[in-house]
Structures are given as C-alpha cells and as structure tokens.
Image (cartoon, rainbow, N blue to C red; front, side):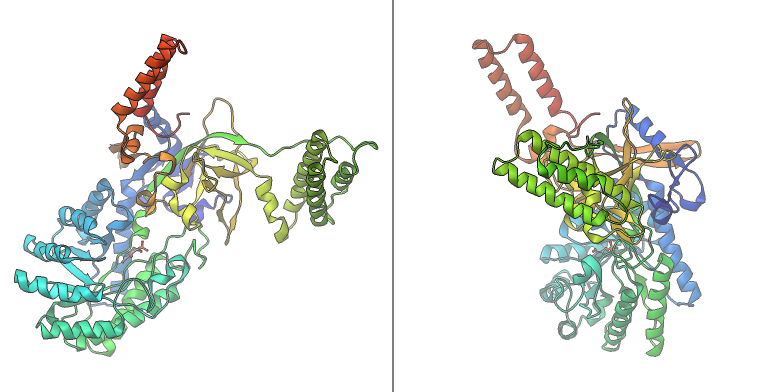
Length: 621
Ligand code: PLP
C-alpha cells in the first residue's frame, strides 16, 4: 500500500484486499465492494479484451453526492440564506452513458450541465430534463447558438448565456429582441487573481476568455441602453483547472464577490455566482500544493466559497446569490479505471563480469578496476569514471583501436558498474542529482498493451501524473523497477514519471512476469478529459468500455461500449474496408498466377486480413 500510495489517492474507492488484489468500493464508505482482478477476469470471459475502461456508475453518483453534501454542510455552517446548484461541464467527459447517468444521479440536487461549445449545447439541451437545473452556456457563440439557448427557455429549461466575448453582448441583445424572449445572461469576468499550475493562464487580464472590468462596464451600458439590464443575472469566473492551493481559490472568490455586488448595485438583477471549475483531484495523495495534488479538501473548498460570498454580500446588505460551480475533474476523474496488460519486458543486462586479464585493452582493465572498487564512499565518482571509460571505448572503436568484441566487453562492464552503483546508491538516504538518471537507465521496460496518446494524453502532453499500479499480486514483493513503453512506434509513447511522496519517481515497482500468467496494471483517476482528448496516433482506437453498477448480489454490466475496430479507424482516414479487401484479393490472384503463393496461403492471408479489419486495434494477449 505504501509503495503505490493507494491510501492517499484511492480512498474511499480503491484499496488492497487480503488476496493481494485491488478492491473497488464504488459507493465509497456506504458499503459494497468488488475485487477488480476477478471483475476483469469475468469481463475477459465475456470477450471484452484489454485494454478495458471500466466505469463505475456508483462512484459517479458518490462524487455528486459528496459535492452537494459539502456545499450543504457549508451552507448550514455559515447560515447561508441561499442555495447551491452545481453543473457538470460536459467537456470533461461527453460520453452519452456518463452524461445521462450524471443527470439521473444529479436530479435530487437539481444538478445541471455546462456546455462549452455548440456540439456540447446539443448534448446538454437534449439530455437535461431536471426541472430547475441550470444549463450554463459557455464558450464561443454565434447567433444560432444564442438563439437556440434562448428558445430553450420555452421548453422549460433554465439556460444561462454567459457572455465571454465582447461581440456576444450585441448578439444576445439582438436575439432577445428578435425572439421577444428576455434572455438570462451571465458575464464571465477576467479576474486579476492569478491561477496556479498548468492551467494558471486561464485567469488574468490576457486570458483567452472573459471580459475585463472596462468591458463588463461597457456590456452593462449596452444592456441598459437596450432596456435589458434585468437579463444580467450571473457572474462567472474560472481561474483554471486543478487549483492546487486553497489560497488561490480564496483570492479569486473575494475578487469575484466584489464584482458581483458592484454589478447588483449597478442595477443588474444578480441572482447567481458561478465559481467555475478548478476543484482539484489528489492524484498522488500527498495533500500538498504540488500540481498533482491539492492542499485542501472538498469541504474546505465549499466552506471558503460560501463564507467569502456571504461576507461580501453582508457588507453591502445585499441578498446572497445561488452558488453555482462547474466542477468537472472532481466529479468525473475517479469513476473510470483503465485496465491493461503487459505484453513483455526488456530487462537491463545483469551479470557478474569476469576479471580483466593483463592482456586485455587498457580501457577494459580500467572499467574492471572501477567495477571492483565501488563502495558507499566512492560510488558517485565511480559512476563518472565508468561513464567516461565507456565513452572512450566507443570513441576508440570509431577510430579502429578497439575491436567489436572489446567494445561489447566494455559495454557489459559498464552495465555491471551501473548495476553495482545503483545498489549502493539505493541504500543511501540521499541520491545525488547526477545519479538520478541511473534509475532510468537501469530500469526494466514493460511493454504495455495501450496507447498513451489514446488513453492518457495528458501524461504525454503535459506530464500529468496518474496513479498506475498492478491490480493483483499485491501481497508479493515487486522485484522490478520499470518504465512503461506503449504500443505506438513513437518514442514519446512511454510513461516514466510516477507518483511518489511529494515528488515524482522515474520508475514503477512491478513484479517479474510469470510465464502463462497475465499481468494486469491499471491507471486510475483518468475519467476526466483523457477519453475525449485521446487521439488515433498509429491508429490505435477507442478502447473497450463497460459500465458497472453494484447490486446487492454483486454487480451488473449496465452498458458495453465496444472499442473501435480496425475498419472503423481506417474509415476515419477514408479507407474503405471492402476496397482494401478487394485490393488484397487481386494481389493474391496475381501472385497465384505467377505461382508465388499457394492457394492455401492466399486463403490464409485473406482470412487474416478480413478478420483483422473487424477486430480490435490492440493486441490480443
Ligand atoms: N468551467 C470552465 C469554463 C472550464 O474551462 C473548465 C475546464 O477547464 C471547467 C469548468 C472544469 O474545470 P475542472 O475540471 O477543473 O473542474
């Protein structure tokens, strides 16, 4: 448990059971659990191959419950005379089954949806059927977007059009007039409170979205002139995702609350304050303000939001707003677990070298002397010597002074030095910076049946850390330290940063493979943003996905969403499966005529080709 820090990031959903398997408790503390390894085994028997994305609907429900409960407690604690109405930003995970479940689970809390684009508006309008729930309309808008959103009021929905660009003010006024419907408008403010971490630039005067203070004042003038100031009811801000420090949240809310009350005093009919997203996820369990973590919990967040808003309104004697938040990551991350298998490994060379003979090349004797003299006192110096001797051997080889056999011997001696130095270094309290690469150099490589680009794009694009660990054999000591290499033929298709206490480590502790036995790993907390941002690099498509819900007797498979087949991904790049098969058939006919292939071989080739096209893009183990 310590090794993978599962208690830190996994609670209350993931833990390890007596069999050494991961246990999933989808309802959190409210009981019921599943053995993940047994679940995967059972799903494989249903012909659901790996990699497999398992979505636990109960976790989704639990996240919604927790967020609403946290705001409920904060409202009670501060005697806040208003309510909380959360919305889920659809951008975070647009999968239909997930959004539909979310709307269903959110009903008791009038949980709404946020759309960040026209296609997301289409989803939100058709899916949200909860009376009183908000439909927050963000993102770039054209006339059609705005008209559609306004007309949705006639369907009984509560669409709030958030003005994010200066041009949208005039568009909204014109659309409202044309339709004869008073729109409900919000305005997104560019706060000067700074964000933090990877998404910190979402705030600030030069942020991509939102209106500056002068622009907001101008919008108020325009609305007033059009006799529509009563339409302006919401103030929105978003200072970036994964805010790791609570102070940043507090500063932003303080500034936004002031803008809110000023707008109310200018005559807008202010009713809502929308604090955007940003509620962080503790990916490494360290509870620090390191970007993979956060130094606060959901309750601290809700308390600060509620308290700051209440205080500012009380100072101005104004009624408090309904509080809206657009938490995506905090709602969707935990519910999906991506399980994948290891296809093979490549181990670093490991051998005890033969002593150097007097007649061997000087460079070999030097390397052997370095090897035999390694101690706790000189291991750092020994590493530099060994590296230098090895480089010299390579350069002497280039000039023809060292033979191929001698170069091989020099390289093996170098690896032996590295192995011994690493053993000594691991026993020290502190590993010098210049030896950090050694862990990586000496790591095993585990080849995983996965595309990082498809399933963990943020790990490749922005070095996002996700917890990754085996789902079984957890009562066995892992004897290997490994980096992970994916199926793509791209050297960026790897994972070599793993969570560690307050830091990142470059290797993951794993078990040696056993023959005839699969070895399963899982990536956790990837339910937000990863699926939709994943790409088809090397034409590895969507993975298989299942939705699982707990039942009194075990579990139920609610939905199976089969991953892309080869003919589907080839279709995305305009290849037609029939044409491809016909092409191969003609080639086989030609080869038959020229007697380069037998009939049996040609049939086998065609059969394989056709079967592949309708098969999964990943490897079958
Ligand atoms: N709202 C807006 C406007 C966003 O841009 C985002 C994403 O960055 C979110 C909400 C969701 O943020 P998070 O996933 O941090 O909750």
